Image (tube, helix red, strand yellow):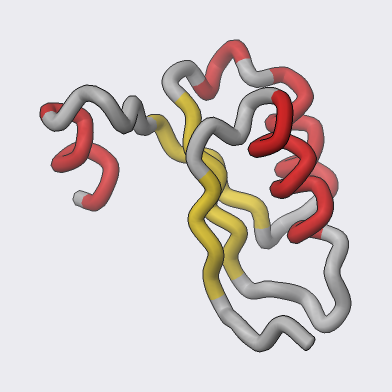
Length: 75
């Protein structure tokens, strides 16, 4: 059994990252915070749909190869 309160998923707007968010959002007992990151949250339609259906999914902008984006991510 997974016993965590928060999970961070990078590259969550498509592929494996998106499916991981979908699966984590539906786990029982519920994970308090599924933090889904992607480079362009405005264009992540499927991810936004998951977040609207699950109040524990939070979408944040993060480009892991751009160190300048890190400060905006955690502040």
